[in-house]
Length: 274
Length: 305
Image (cartoon, rainbow over all chains, first blue to last red; front, side, top):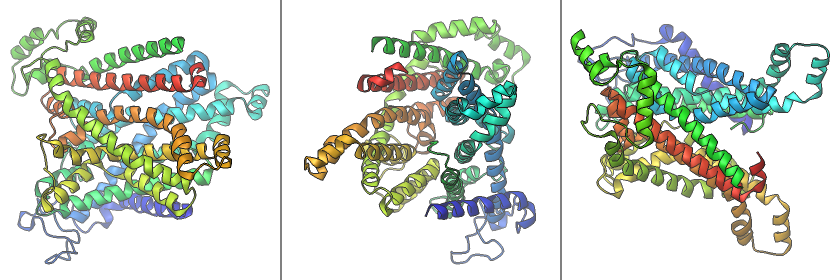
């Protein structure tokens, strides 16, 4: 069962990554090409569908499947880059706090407490609202906001390692402090951080979709899944599939990442990092 | 206990001050606020007038001290767009957000506590796995999308519930369910692990040996101990839910504080934006502090930390 989750998650994430990388070469149509004569064409499971547009077309006649596949690019890009940024911030803070303890640790704990008090969605919306929506800004804002779990986990795992024999051995062998942090501590907390990375990646993708849905994330005409749902909202009562397709895709990809993370946790024995 | 409480209060005040500074700096990010307020098509003279009128020509520190001093006594200035006191606007909208948050929390608790107990009692069985799967599904659900799907299903197709607005209690059902989804995974997992820990402890073995009924062991002994962390996490979750309700309020056109913030962001109404960020952060800080104090009261070991 657990293994099944890991495999399923891996397959879903693998497909999403492939779509993200290969999008321009595998989609049947240009995702930005409008055709006002062929608006809101129905997907393949409904009567009157057109085999040329398997998932139908949107309100501007753009091929839905092509937009969906290109949307994977945006979600994966946001997920990966946000995790890189927040992982760097959170891990640095957590390792420093956990390793040095005392005043340093107090400062790190205080930073985590402050970060948790800040309402993420609201602040992200406000920043994008003030500075104008762009993909780069969304990544930056989410990266600067989602480091708390990295810091918490890096801190507690570093604390456990700090007093172990092999670290003491490295000390007495004359290894410098940065050397110990990079060569002894970091490799040994990496599996815990990998699990956090999957959770944060899933969260970042969900948040980007929510921001884009509210009109303060990725700007149109980029095919973000959240934006596709927002654009389909006006037609959802008569053509529910316009919000159904991107929503289900978003849900499955996020679920896949979470399944992968859960499986990794068991596989690497990373314990409870939630 | 008093020492612990005082130290906790001091930390909370420091956090509040930091968040206050951050929410002030947040709205100065764009560089020149006067240009944003003046809007497109304003002449440099217009911008200069606005800059003077709103005191934006003063040093940043002076502006901050002025704002912080007033905010400390509940005066957040005037809204540019709504032409009203920011404090009045927030006070008017807060009941909607609080009702939504408490509804969401109540639904989340009503779902996750039974699920968590069920999973713990049948640990490692298919029931347990199913419950964990439910938690994972809840975690992956895009809340705004779930809201739209519920609107189509229960609002339009079945006609059971109103689609948007705040007229009656029925207006809070769908938004409450959607908001609950964000808290259910964490609360379910915590109830489950708390119950598993409690069920494996010595006093439960004693209770079993005494021949107490299964129900009384579960309800009276295990649950009471598992409830302590659940109550404190519930307080923290409520804080997160109030902060995150902006998305759901916008989807369902519930005119609460989140909706107010969304309107203000799109109108560059920065006094409202920074006040809402600050107020929601303060509520979160107060809730977590209350949870910590409660924990300290119930579990003396925590006071040393």
